[in-house]
Image 1: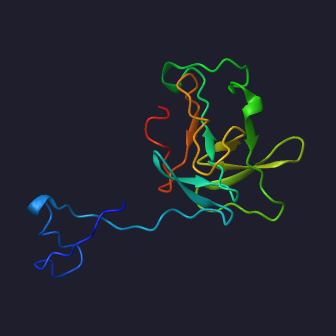
Image 2: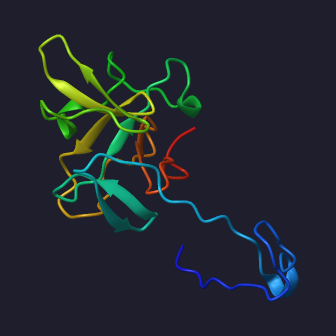
Amino acid sequence: KAQPLYRYADDFKPGDIEGHGLQNKRAVVLEPPPPVPQWITYEQSDGGELLADSSGKTIYAHVFIPGGNNGFQPRAENGMDRPYDWSPVLAAPEASPIGQWSIVTHEDGTRQWTHRGWLLYTNNRDQEPGALNGVRSTDRIWRPIMKSGQTMPGTGV
């Protein structure tokens, strides 16, 4: 998270956190980011490091919860306001699931990536890497995914 790391001299064995809280320092657990498909890239945005497709377009999870979404209701019947703004993130024929990433096959035979069960899309108005044109206050069903695997804070429930 772009912060310097320090070791504390009185921590002798794994799991020791004697320096936690001293001089405003806190213990952290370093973990690798969750596994992602090979085509994923990372892009910097105003909200932090985001997951993007191979061309740098931000990836959004379509989190449609009937009667939910923090009181915001999409206007379209299928839960997608302005469907012409969105392109599904399609899976190649040889692609296979990894970690929290799965693939659903639609009736027409297209295969679309999902993350944690949410269908994934890019926004057609995102013209530069890290753009967030899919985040709108009137439609909180679109959530960019951060490098941590969590959705961007403040973009939904």
